[in-house]
Structures are given as structure tokens and as C-alpha cells.
Length: 312
Image 1 (cartoon, rainbow, N blue to C red):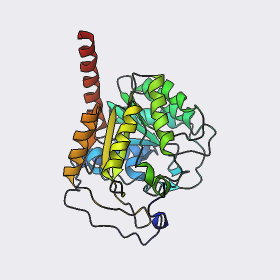
Image 2 (cartoon, one colour):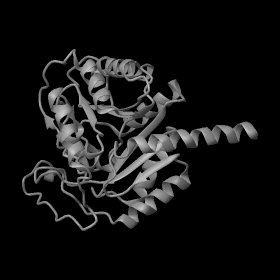
Image 3 (cartoon, rainbow, N blue to C red):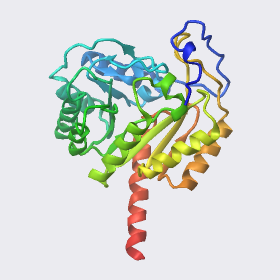
Image 4 (cartoon, rainbow, N blue to C red):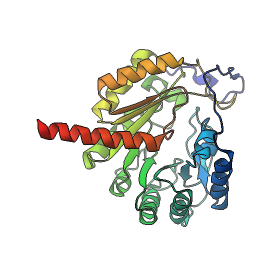
């Protein structure tokens, strides 16, 4: 299918639209915010909160929550929606697994989210390094649950299995947008490769919670979003996040529109009716936003489902 507005991607004429009143963020506890910042800077770590200009950074850091981004701050992909730097990455930091584990301990995290840039330059896409980070974090933080937000490991074969066997509590891979927009929004990725990745994770370990997310406001239609939901459910994805695309700069993919909170509410109701275990849907929803609270809800719902099946 023909991509929409490919000529506008990475073009400085894409003027930023004024944000509506419902997109607001705030700092809840400035002392915790700067303490979190200190721990991250002292460990020379990267977070998706900073690198991707997340709108929730003030709130999350004020709660001493952070999403660690491993394998550097330079991505080999050039997704037109993303604010992470694109280019040729440097070498892997072999001490990073320990650094992430120690920062998780210092922040006192009960649930930690670990993501990464795409590393197409590496033979295994960085899967082995990612798995080491999970293993080391578990070793030092025995009571902390771990959520990974992974690349698609496109054309890397079954290397993703290394990360599955590291046994994270949640395996998250974002679908990001609808298939018709992939050529212009995610030119280095393939829609059905991402669907297959999520499906394969569940086949290997049915006990791992799987999760994916999509952005609204890029020019997608309602029916396209509903089709993405169906595709994710076929892949047995448990948890869906739906958030507003916020255009980082005038050089990024042009924002089509700001989606009203009522539409997000409607999509949440539809997604739950279709069969997702948990759905987070709002303008400021992001993959790791309130991830700890949502994980607790998923565990509780899974337990209830199991008990119901046993009684039948």
C-alpha cells in the first residue's frame, strides 16, 4: 500500500502544532526528581525518558521511576517519529549489565523497564548483551520484576530467544503504528515481523506477559487501529498501550491531529471488549508509563483467570 506523506518525513517545513489543554505534565516531588537524575548521571546511563523526550519524565522521575536504555544512545534505524539519535553506534559497554543492576538497586525499583536502541550493526542485534543485563539485574535485585522493551531483531534469525530465556516478567515490543504508515513512519521495520516476534515469544513461554503499543495522531483510521488490535490478539498479546504521537521537532513526521481523550477512552473499551487483559489508553500513555502498577494488575487478573478455569 502506498505510504502517506513520505515526502514530508525529516523535512523542516513540518511545523509543530500547538498542544491542547489536555496534554499537561507536572513535577510531583522535585527532591526525588533530582535524586533520580543524580543516580542516572553518576552511573553514566541512558534513559528513554531523556533520549526520546518523553512527556512524562517529570512525573516518573519524581516517583523515582526510570526506563533504562541500553547499548548506547545512537540507533541504527531512522524512524521518522523518534527523537533518539540516528547514526553509527559505538562499542558495547561490557560493564553496563552491572551498572543497570546497581542503578535499579539504588533507586529501589520494585519493577524496572529496560529498553534499547536498535543495533543492526551487531550480528545478534545486541540480544546477548540485553539478556546479560536482565540476568545481572535479577541477580542483584531478587525481588524486582523486569520488563523488557525490545527491538524487532529484524533479519537476525532466532536471536530474540536469548532474551526470552533470560525470563523477563514482561516482554514488550511496540507495533507503533498501522501497516499503511510503516514505509514513512518505520521505514527500517516490517509490521508482520513485529507481530511474528510477539507471537513467537508467547509460543516459547506462555507465562511471560507480552505487551505492545501503538501511537495515534499519525493519520491512521479507526478501522486500521481495530485491525492492529486483532492482529495483536492473534499473537496472544496480553497488554496494549495506546498513546498520542507528539511530534518532537519540525524535522520529524508531521502530526496529523491531536486525538481527544474521549477517543482514547473509546479505544480502551473496544480493546478490552476484544479480549486484552490490560489496556492503557490516554494522550500521555507511553510503554513504560505506570508500568509497575499495570504489571500488578496483570498478575492479579492472570491469577483470577487461572482460578476461574480451575473451578470450571
